[in-house]
Amino acid sequence: MTEIAIDVTRASCLNVAGVDLAADLSGALFWEEESLLVVSDLHLEKGSSFAARGVLLPPYDTAATLGRLGAVIARHDPRVVIALGDSFHDSSAHDRLSAPDRDAIAALQLRRDWIWICGNHDPAPPSDLGGVVALEVALGPIVFRHEPTGVLGEIAGHLHPKARVSSRGRSMERRCFACDGERAVMPAFGAYTGGLSIRDAAFARIFRTLEFMAHVLGDHRLHHIAASRCY
Image 1 (tube, rainbow, N blue to C red):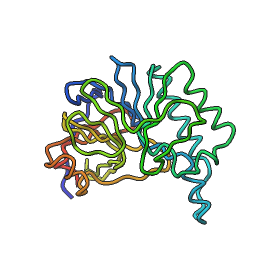
Image 2 (image 1 turned 45 degrees about the vertical axis):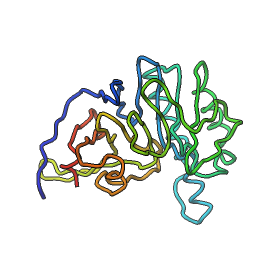
Image 3 (image 1 turned 90 degrees about the vertical axis):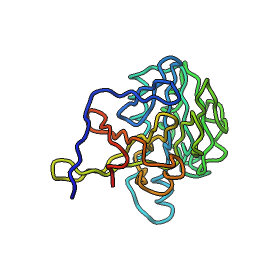
Image 4 (image 1 turned 120 degrees about the horizontal axis):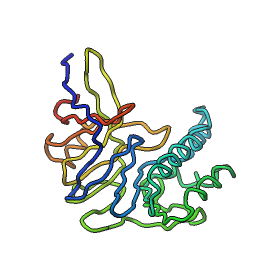
């Protein structure tokens, strides 16, 4: 197994189309100038969806995801939050939300604007959970949408990027931001969300070449690794 030299720094800034964004280790992005926090692919109630099909998972994913979201909101205190699609795992997920989880969502929305972007799992996000629903949001040079198309200035989700590397004789696989300075794909935020390797053909269609970076979410800092050095 080839050992990879990893650039490990405490810097957590991503630049997309000239805009500097803070990459939070939770998997969120924060645009300080606009006081805007972005998260993608919460997949709330994925556990209950699987349970309905006979696949038993601990039913705590929604509470865990909302707890992590509450922590990152507390860190940055954004004026606006954009949930970048697939916030709900299926079309009836919001009906399965517990009363405490509904209260948690309402508390997170207090004193801030909240935008639910439509995803492929939730093409019609519920209108009774606060906030507004949009297909996409354009702000300055940036466009926020769920499914990436590869256009300049795009920040999207959907693909759940992850990277695998070898370091000091052992392999690690972690969620990551995929970014080439012109566009970015965000990691999934939800507790039960899986991942897709950045070496998959789906990323080649977005970035065209391997000249992009995997900003891997470590325990204490971001690891900045060239996509060509992942496997």
